[in-house]
Image (cartoon, rainbow, N blue to C red):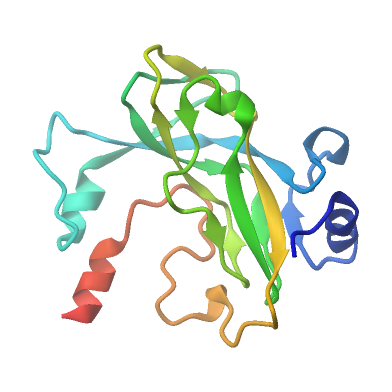
Length: 193
């Protein structure tokens, strides 16, 4: 079941869902979601320096990415075809019986910007900022500003509290993240071999 606006407010008030900093509910609360804002840190692939990414080698991923810090009043320009990782301003903490679902905002999508490729579900027990996979599918460059509402989280109940919340999983790779984090797929490959 997806939480309504009234259930989201109640969950925020009783601490079941924690969002820090607390959102301005007049501006950020939708009928079934809460808008999250774009942070100041971005990660981009340096495709001119590296021929390819090899997910079996951690240095292939991490070394191929560069971190860019943008001042709060300056834009991050997404050129057509660009891909970047970015994080939300807000830190989200979920209880063991709710999952979060991140969706891009329609107003951003209408500019050609996708906010996530496939990573829409934040498991029960999640804690941290959300890393978004931003892409410009349009033909024109788009300026994205830190602090702008860029995505929305909705919340769904699961049938019962999970046995192992995400933050306690032995193999969780992203719990507690504050800035965008490059793919840690190589850790899976290392553990599976």
